[in-house]
Image (cartoon, rainbow, N blue to C red; front, side, top):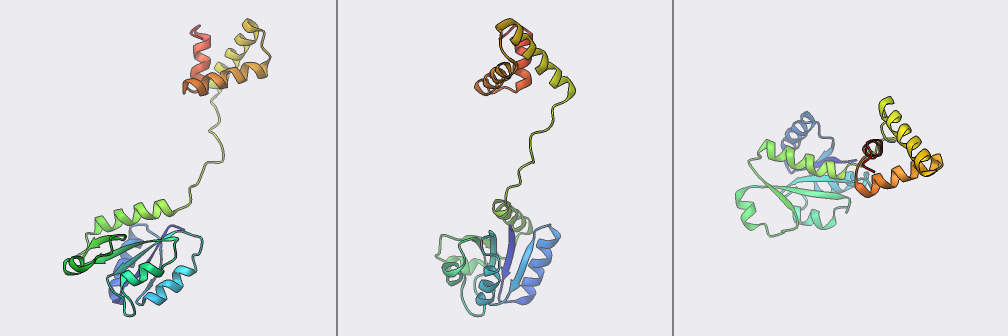
Length: 181
């Protein structure tokens, strides 16, 4: 999921944060003015990672209490004033200062939501260009002729040399064609 759930005592602050994050392209999962409501909303995203952004205290619990009972799939960021920060002793939570530096808030939440988002892997490798395929074909033909290899053996040789050297298959094929290998 990789979204942000906002929990603040003040609904106006929830709305401002929600608009700010949405304008920055961050997915807002919802807002709540009570810790219990935030927990119910977080439970809907069971199995999906997210970030719980909250103020020092909601109307029914503190950030420390919420942290202890929040779902494990949610990271937590607490917004604190200088006075609250002086008395806040829970060192396991990420804290940001109020007044909020918009850039710090967005950068922090982007970092956390990108870590929480599922990784999308491409469907497969990029198709080779015609010239790359021709280089590989010529190198395999040379190996087959020079070393009496079958086509699959020549291809495996190119792959093995590529993996061992950390070079691309095309680079290894060029080395063979240039007499280096």
